[in-house]
Length: 168
Image (cartoon, rainbow, N blue to C red; front, side, top):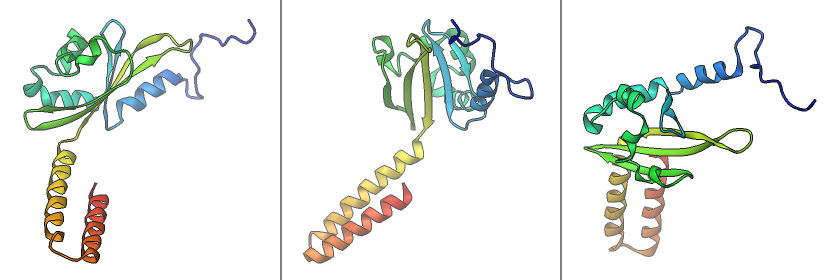
């Protein structure tokens, strides 16, 4: 039909297709991202993902090379929802002192058919440590304010809120 788009890649003035440009951009994003097709094969692993899996390889028991060659089945221990869940998955995983935030989002083609999942892994160890410290700080403030006037309590709570907002 006349409304169907050509299957030829769209190229910019320098001869680079949109897909090539997108792959290049994803390669340099400072967040670990990788694509897993519906058969469980890892079809793309960006530089940040390769670096993160290298850093975590002793804790995971595998690195980026094993993930690419053996597929996403290696992740089932850490993200068991992948076995039966086809929607978006978010979880926090603790690996021997490291905290990783994981988001897995389904990817569909233009017709709405599933083509795989995008995994985004973020090392969140420092953020988790800060959150824990601020929870402790908030508890200490509440303890101190228990012996103070209502006005003083409100000021301490406002101060704790501002400190948390500034640092997180």
